[in-house]
Length: 216
Image 1 (tube, rainbow, N blue to C red):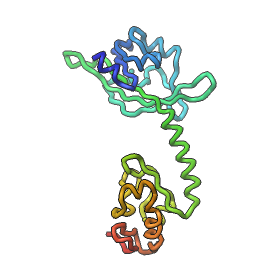
Image 2: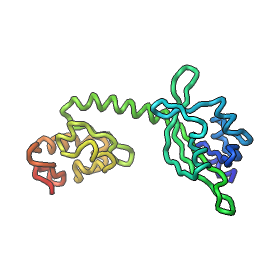
Image 3: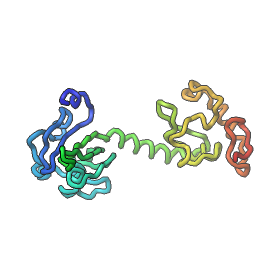
Image 4: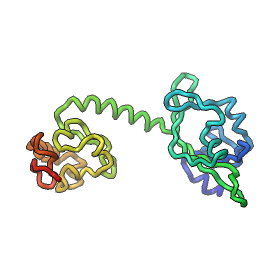
């Protein structure tokens, strides 16, 4: 178990029902989580806050909720305040574990820092606000070719809304374009031409034909 925990990049801690930390990995100790430390003592020296700024009461801390009620918690975000007033953001997952009689014996918490993710989300939101003022179709995709952002100009050209496009493959624009062309924007002129012929009143453009006919 110890060898497995040490291979994980996230902070992992096992907490019993009394709120005492029983087992951690090295990453957890960077978060001031270490065996023999009680959550009550930790709560006296460290406060955590919800994304909207509300402070957690100690009994509301995710791992203690899971240990007390058996609640399974997925991607709950919180932050800590640094001495300079800035925020350090985290996300955690928690799940209860049970003893031989089937009673809740405690909970395990897995915590990761998401400051970089938050920074990138903020930059992307600022960028999209600027991009929505252009007539061009601008698409952001991850390394797997899944769309992560879709500008207003792209919606006008291809008909997919900002809510529909994210998570889908970039191929919804033009399946006939090669992946290498799409990722390098070598096919951008084809994409722009295909979108330009779409009539706003003709419905969503069929990307397979490059025409402006309605799709059912």
